[in-house]
Image (cartoon, rainbow over all chains, first blue to last red):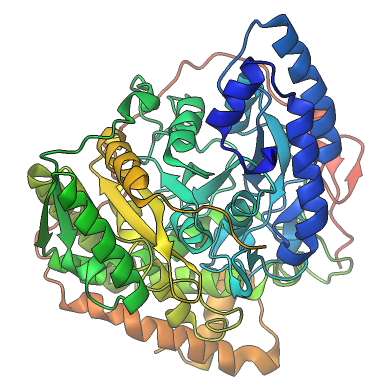
Length: 486
Length: 93
């Protein structure tokens, strides 16, 4: 049995029956990482030596049989923008190349309470700015385990590739405009962005604070629910955290969606979508109807402008958030300067990669005198219209569905020189961030070339129940073969 | 359209500098993106209030009580250079 390919809920059962040991899971992962990591580059920092020690401690807990949690003894990888105390957290940036946080992110503290095992810190686009995981400062781009000539998607490319390739069991990513769902879709795994405010952002290195949300990347929907149970909840360290009790997300895993009302927003599902994604969409819609759901095409015209809104608001917030990186209190610093001004400029110019610099400049433009009203303020008003349109749609529909991405994975380098073409990758995913909605991407089959197709399900604010239920039912009906040929 | 002069101004605001030979390419890439963003001008937003955050939470106050924080040693741990109990910056003329 290749333990590294099982789901957390399957491993949990085997661990409790004492048929396997946590040490064996870690060992099977270590062997897999050894074999494929040089091809994939999904890791920035490997922590498997620590993981082996941790597994030994978990096995002691299992032998005593007390204090067992869902994720006890389960390896989980973390995107490298999630702070881990005394373990390097780089955001895939030169400016943080040796940075070791002095505290854990809230999600890490919560996973520790579960007795999880950290399997590694995972690769990403620098500061989560990218849709392909090609903007990496350490080593080459992350590669897609289904075909190494293709991108893994971004920005949580390492988190998706590692789960898909059996280098870890589950992972956490962050999603600002699709950064969990896009790579999950490209790599044939399940990626979930919870409602904004459901998961604490404390210890997540901020990119765009009104959009950022941490969420799980897993092999199936059941694991997604288990991970949500572990990481969701109010946190006083995050002022945008929702002060509401968290349900048991596994209680929504019912294979029954008879009578569910499902809307297909034309602007995200039918316009500018390639034939592979359309094929996946049609297959999913047919299955949903077969299961007794009522499926209707709808129009939310303002969604045509969502990508523009996203690419004004996110760089503007990034301009502000990334101003803290100056090379004085921490981070990369160059040696010789004439003036303090020159010190800041030199540290930042040599510490940030090109895409990060371009987005900071774009943010400065959108916020600067003379452009503020036409760009930043205008985008925030159109965002209100998007929020309202979604609110109206959810008064009539339980979930909205569309492809997770307009195209399947593309070749490495294919979009790197054309910013807008790259940004178009976020077209289907970013609207959920603008409205704070929970949204999941599940694999809906393979294209003729053998690359995964992703299907997205969005729910109303705090209606993860509907999202998980539809995803779980569809996952059963699709019966996706979740193992890449690598 | 951002011209050379405005790009220099933006670089100054950001404390970021691109290499001279990259300037033309970077400016034209920025202008290309801005061209796509301009479509927002077509949306009627008369009387619409802007959205900052989608979850209506205001004044997330907590009690102002002293608690455990990171130590001085931890605060200085990642500094490129320190002296005594402080961060040290390079000599400036």
